[in-house]
Length: 518
Ligand code: SF4
Image (cartoon, rainbow, N blue to C red; front, side, top):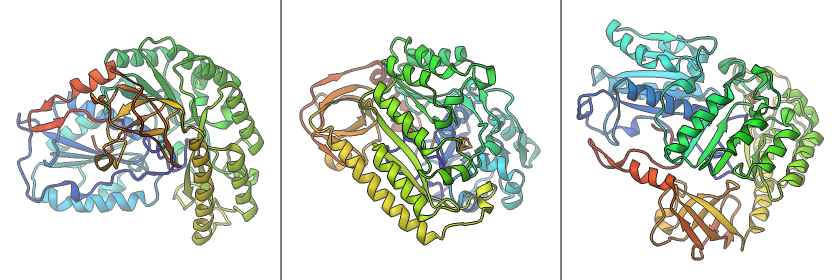
């Protein structure tokens, strides 16, 4: 799994995009009425971090819905604010306590308001959170998602904070209800936890050892999603290539991909994140031979130096990484390959960094998520000798970004004049209001901004168009569309745009699963 866990699907595929920050700004100046118009208590979930956290937030929302809560409308104040935190991002704890501080006067002015903190930072800091911010009502760990409604009830009735942190998973979160963010594109967790010990990563100590879902459960969930209009699924795990280790089938991931290929109506299958150490030929064959598995691969490199990979405890080397790319490209011509790279890991020399630049040149990534190393308390790397000065890290980082962007631009320019099939998305194009273009993802996950089509396709519909211009992080298609295909995904999106009674004009569900507030 990538280092600071910024999701490939939720970005332009190339650079880290900040997750929307939480804070007082989301609240109106006046303190309005608390419950929704039907008297139900309302909630807002603020999500930080990776796709796994965003998917967990869908579960939290589903649980709160099932318990009778209502999602707070835009511009209204929620009765319950849930922080689903990430411990991987830099200064995550400062940011959390800052946001909790901002909420204190709001809570003081609103008797009955509750604040809950869950996710990786809750698992790490536990009761420290209620010591530092005694106005927090509930703290729940990464294995305690299902307990949130009961903990909120208990804290209300007992009038004191509830802290529940389990050390291991009792039931897989996928058995919990979910409020899905997108009606046409869905995340499906296949495993949680990780058995690796990358020295920069705190995930194993917070999410525990890998637990795999049974294939039958996963496929049943995907079939149900497809029946509801979903066209695209992204299989999620900290290390999808080791899927099956907990039930003794080393080839389970390839088999799962092939089984996804049998699901009628499922048009696009993606997965994240693979680990080069466990990437086997049967998975490449399954990717190549299963038409609905997309021609893309996001495979974290982290460093191009063998010495640094060793220090990171990443059990592959530069040659084996490149060999996987060769095999993928031989089996899947034109596959778009993206990666994650950390610059300035402790002990990284100029030669180590030159090795990273060299591998970037050879691998010809379609995009790279690039990160400057900084200390994450609680990880082995935090106390390693040879911490690289920040200014050196920053200078190397700028060289890496320049190279990665130049290569991505060349790769994208090679697509000018080619036809692309775009799954129209809501909320992918930040400049669309000004340019009037629509946006979506090509089959290889490249972001495409295209000229308006009449009648306008809905998010979830498919448009075939021709690439006219390339930029490092996206493609533009300014010619006329060659075809527009209304889909069940578009129907599902249209059905979801029915208005919420206390939120006139606002759709129930919005866009690709990249929103950080549920
Ligand atoms: Fe990914 Fe696991 Fe390594 Fe963390 S320890 S970076 S989750 S493989």
